[in-house]
Length: 135
View 1 (cartoon, rainbow, N blue to C red):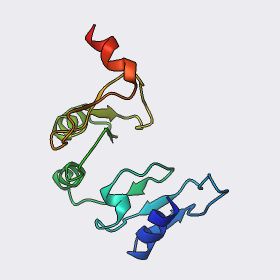
View 2: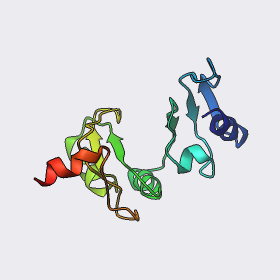
View 3: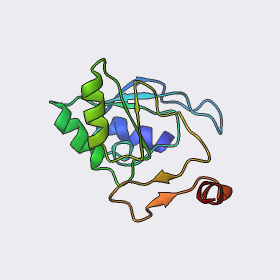
View 4: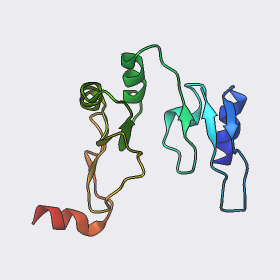
């Protein structure tokens, strides 16, 4: 996480908060504004406390950017317009799209299709999940 944060702010994303190691295994919750599309934080899933904020000209631009990633296990849409939320959810190539909720939601037995462009069509997080679901 630390290397990816440094790369993102050197490219030049703006560090809004955090960005430092607390201990050898803990990194501060960090927020980066407008990291470069070429930065790793913009291209891959970060397994750490690191959300990034991006501005878009319109919804189509935001959806195209999100769908450009190789994998999207979860996505989130925040809006007061339920029609816009459902339309956006249908257009996002993610295994799960949450509406007005964060992507920390998880059910361990739930399989994750890795998206239309993925080489592995379904990922089962636990070995017994596939057996339980297909019985």
